[in-house]
Length: 514
Image (tube, rainbow, N blue to C red; front, side, top):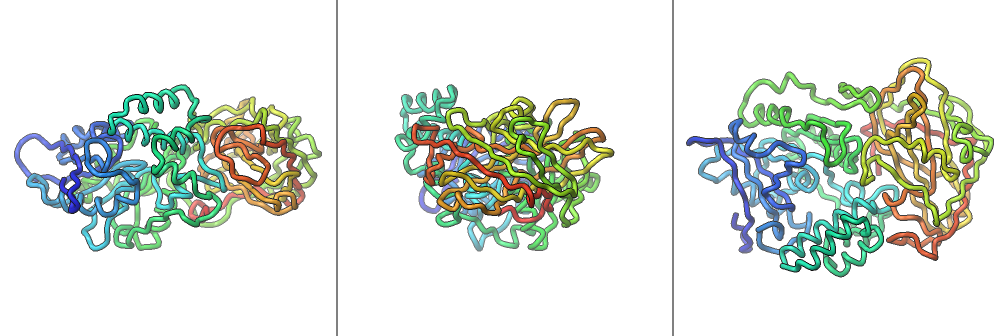
């Protein structure tokens, strides 16, 4: 595909057999067009067999496309050219849909102004805010995930430059896990102008300097299939897109599975085909599928999303001071009265690990029974349920915290105890830096959204720690924002939790997370 500035973007097209003109599906991605996102989707040949031409394009500066890669900033101009170009192909009938997840999800939403729009789009696991939907949460950078992705992009730059030694060094670091310690230096050496390193240089606690993309309302009103995963870090971006589309007058379709970023447990190609058949071929069949359908993390079944916009249940916290020693001592009281004070000591020599969830390299539903037995993890457990309890929303903990240093982290996990095993459902992190950390203040810790039904006899548990390594870096306690592993300057941090007015509540899914 020729670009106005002379760059040429390599594009591979799969077509139905025989002569004809067909609707076309477009995917634009930075990982090599031959992969075609088959880690999550059916191969383009399958869509071609259903009567579609499928074009998969290497974005500028990736794969075999010419030009310099500059990340999301380049995609609006090239995306508009690509949309017009595929419509002009001799075997295309002029109706175009876009699909893809992650980077390929956002490229669908970045189109230069004044051009035509796709007739239908299916962005998956992507968002518009580079700070909140791609790089950080709670004031802390995504460390393992963000660093790993940035190094993957750096390796592609090394491959294109013919620097095999750099490619092998980057690959070895990722394979061996040493990137958690040396990854920042590798990025500075091999991809100093890269998007990933650029994000790490920005303050995750402030919107200053970060890019937030703004699609037109016309695009948000187009037929749209939004796809997310409860264990995916970009879920907040998907829910933000849903809210924006509704505000613009759109009516998007939604699927949220018990999925990680790369494991969709059978995928959704049949639904996606029905979606494009309806909007690109005027065929019936989509009506048989619910418009908003989500997986229940508790029961394992699928259900309609019933988000009425009202706040859900709430719980108080109570402890006599031993919730970090005895995992059964702290109490989570439905509509009860909390109380007690709790000291929680964080030792950087043995930081509490992060596991599973949406930020883990081992993302997903995990057993954290052993983590809750640690003496630097405070647990608050609700009584066994008398009947089923449906949770649907964004968990948020509000409580008063202070510490004896100029910085602390509060890392939370919401879990269900089922037959003696603690299954982690949702996690979140709050990072605080500065002298104000020594003062007792009311603070809010937001966790990953969820839908989960707990059965009679099961128990809800909230676990709190002062680190979640390597999902986020360990807070040094100095007030500085330190990128990298624990060093000799990291301090022991003692947190004081005042529980008398602490509250865990469930906010509506469509409430804003920033």
